[in-house]
Image (cartoon, rainbow, N blue to C red; front, side):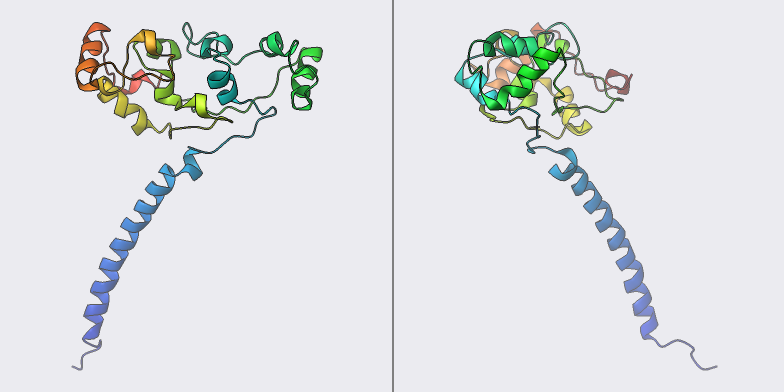
Length: 216
């Protein structure tokens, strides 16, 4: 009986099979890279705001402490967004006619809230408590980056689960004395490899990695 298929068909079949495998693996790699990219995570992307509030000016320039605006950060899960009254504490006296601050003055007159755009907005299925992280020595800049150098705020890190887990698995790499959590210029007085483990023991830090720690 004559051969139906040409011998090269075997080679073509093998190439097709292995090519399909490599195509699937390549597609999965591409999806993974896309999921980690700023296009998805918005890391490093400046968010437009109704008022161009400059952290660099207020924090580094004027020396305003984080807690002046984020009043509940030490006691609650949510750091708190400053009310318009907080803004007007200063701006009823200075830059009172600045056009860029008109939305602030209008919100104050009408007793309305400014619709700020959340920069660090976790999904609803992820629970995060600011107060416990501060109490355990996680500094503001550890998660939020150099906020004091941001003319307009951006998300420094991806906020992906793997980023959170990195710290939860090895908290000794990231913690600092609780008295320094608001210090944007903090530098450890001794090597982190020595200071970190000591703080983990002193503050009774337990790097929880079970699902219920964040997904409640």
